[in-house]
Structure formats: structure tokens, C-alpha cells
Image (cartoon, rainbow, N blue to C red; front, side, top):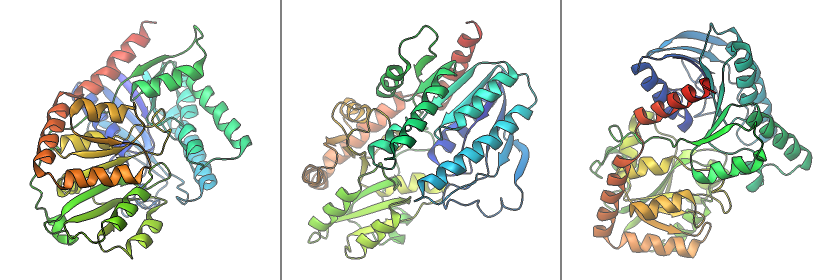
Length: 410
């Protein structure tokens, strides 16, 4: 099978979607499939093209078993939504041209979203190569941006809603990460006989790379965490994550020398969080770490945090949850009741779910887990066992292959 993949990120870019699609491409190649990828030059960490990749607008070559075309990402500043949207549109246009020029034939085009405009590039490419289009939705946009107030203009909302419907209806299949997201997409399609297939294909857990490690890591020494119970949020510091609950918990626990809070990542809220940490000696804000340190970073915490703003569970599933479970660490999930994350935490027995943006409930959960090492160990082991039963990289790749085979028979 020959597949054309269009994605905003690919390793060594550090975006979570880049890690996911890189492993899927690797597994597809290992299974004997021919994969051609159109993506960006690495830029996610600092919103600029990384050292060693600058100087050329386009790079072509083989990466693993795939042929890859890398393009200028046109990255805008993180805090300027309009500039970022224009950058995504420019990248999508460039990706469409590169995908049209790709040497076919292809059995399918697979596109990752967001960014939403990339769906139009996939549609153009699928028409050019006369093959099915599979739209892989990692987060439902613009729902997330609207819910957090990043988009408030009625005109922009109508524009993005129209683009969203266009991308869904021009696809032959839409894949999502959870039943919540599937219900969201299905509700927007209207129930026509011409609607695309909507399938749940969750992100995988790489339990070979992410596994339980000793908590006494170099990371702990580097950031002066010592033997304290470390409560960590690791990931994007953006509009969707209400990390003020961690700042508030650190403030309330200012008189406790046995608990340390760590926020590890980058994003539009990073500067604000660093300013808050200046007055809180028990709160450390750390920038993104290299990809090869991820297992060490996860192992350094005694308790991890997954947080989503109220109302976002129908449009977003934090993939970091699966890595935390694979690392054998318990988690506190500050999420909507009944959401995919809350369901998994309860089913796996791997942590505590609390209402979103509820500082009192969050602090109570921290105190419960900080005070019971035995419960932390038990929850971590339960989460690891659940992760080992969850989707593997190979099974996720195989699910995409079966979907393409089904589309070819329609």
C-alpha cells in the first residue's frame, strides 16, 4: 500500500502529534507499506525553525523507511492567534503544492488536524491523486479555541466553522481519539448518506520506551527537588490548560517542605507562570526537555497532573495521560465528569479525578496522594497494567491500514 501523509509535525520536532505520526509512519514502513510524508521543518519548541534546519525553505530526503518533504512552517508568535492562523494557512498552501507534486499513485491521503487548513491541502491532494482522504483529528478545532476565549469574533467563528464542515464533508473518513470526539464530529455532519465514516482510533502507548523508572533521577538533582513529593504538570502551557490550580496549590502549601510542584513545558502561558513562581519557592517552572529525556522527566514525579478547562472534554483528549500511565505514576485529572480522561482514570484505578478548575478539590487530592506512598505505588502499578493492555503503535498503524482497505472497497 502507498500512503501520502500530510502532517504539521514529524520527529525530531517535539510536538506530541509529531511523535505520534512518526511512530505510525515507522510501523507502516516496517509492515511493508510505502509512505511519503509532507511536513514542516522542526519548529515547535521555540516557534522558530531549529538550528541545523535553517537556510533552505524545502528539504527532501529519506527518514527511516519514508520519503519526506519538509517545508517552511511560517510559524507565528505563540500569543498572536491571527498571525499563527495566517502561518498555518501559508504552510497548508505550501503543503498542498508539495502533495500535488508527490509521485503517485497513492492508495490514500492521511492528514492530521489541527491545523484545520491542512484539511484543505489533503482534499486537493486526494483529488489530484484520485484516492480516499482520511482526516485524523487530534483536537476538534475551532471548539477548543472558542471554549477558552482565544476566538471571540463572530465572523471568525463562522469562518472556522465553515472550514471545519468543509474538511469533514470532503473527507472519506474522519478518525478521532475518543467516543466524545466522535459524537462531536458526528453531530456536525447532519446524518446524510454521503457523510464520511467516523472512526475512533486512539493514540497509542509506547510501553517499551515509556516505562517505570527509579524516581531518583538526574532531573531531580538538576532542579533541586531532592526527596520531596513532586507533583508535576508536563506538556503544553496554553489556553486549554487551567494551570492556575497548580499555582494556587503551591501557594497553599507554602509552609510544607515535603511537597514540590513542577510545571515542565512551554506555550503562551509560560511567562506568566514563571512570574508566579518567583514568589513561590516550592514551584519550579522548567522549559521543554529534549525528547530523549521524556522517560526521565516522567519518572521524576511522584504524582502527575492532567488538566483541561471546563467543557473541553468533547473536543480534546490529552495524549500525555497515556504516557503517564505507561510510566507507572499516578495522576490527578482535573477534567469534566464523564469525560474520556475521567473514564480512563477510573477504569484503570490510576489516580484521582476532580472537577476542572476546582482548587479546593485539587489540593485535597494532592494531600491525599502526598500522604500515602502505598496508594501512589498501587495506582501507578494499576495504570501501567492498563497501559500495557491499551493500543500499541503497531495496532494503531494496522487500524489505519484496515480503514484504507475498507475505503477502497466502497
